[in-house]
Length: 317
Image 1 (tube, helix red, strand yellow):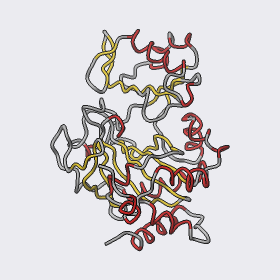
Image 2 (tube, rainbow, N blue to C red):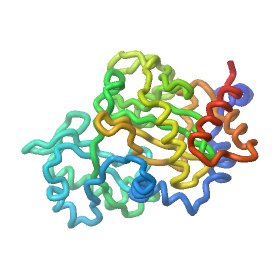
Image 3 (tube, helix red, strand yellow):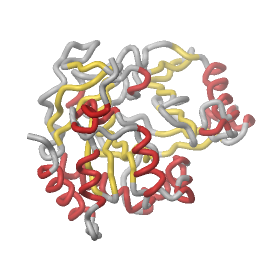
Image 4 (cartoon, rainbow, N blue to C red):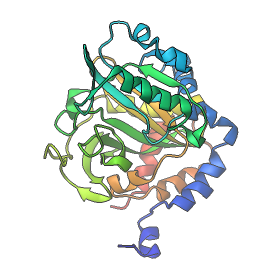
């Protein structure tokens, strides 16, 4: 079903064309894209700013280095392999355990040494990178997600996406892995996106494959009513990420680790629009309200406060 343009406008829905022309092109300088498109650069910037990120075990840059993977891993039994310039979750491999005969993926299936090497080789060739350019493979800590989400996630690690405009958080959702997404928190691959009330940090119903859902398709557990611990800290963290890259329209992806707390996974210069469906509200009213501000506060704390105030004034009752 195609919704009439007037209905979408009245709902404050931000369209793809509007996002690109009015917000990404206008507020994201192209010269700054490498700071977020290169996950190694992002990780280094975050660490320099004192923002916690998953530990980097090593980087595979050449085919020859694949043979040295065992030395890189040492005695670590779980890890994540991801392309440094990947997008949309493509190429990310989550290994939950190592056995004598291979590796156990998040989906529960086995992978041999040669299959792992082949996957890393594909990353190096640019199969998963932006523009298909040769890439590097990052080997990093496998997040042990907070038990708060254990009833609404299938095998993989949930993450929290927040849209930040001019340093002001405007919308959040939690992305929950499913069987069809192969344990990945990627909406395009079948994960669930559950809206989060920005003022309280409590989850709402969500969206899966562009359809409204109130429960997780695999576990059957309700999506709404989960209070995310340390929510104020998470909003502040999202606002601080603006200072890393100075991109005006930004997606910030954070995971809750049971041992290390909030960790920034990555930043995105072209965040998608499904967050509007997950929250049942359009982004446009609050984005326009922020555009009209003559000045934006310097501190992350004040930017969070501004966002909550504008959201309260520009969200339909």
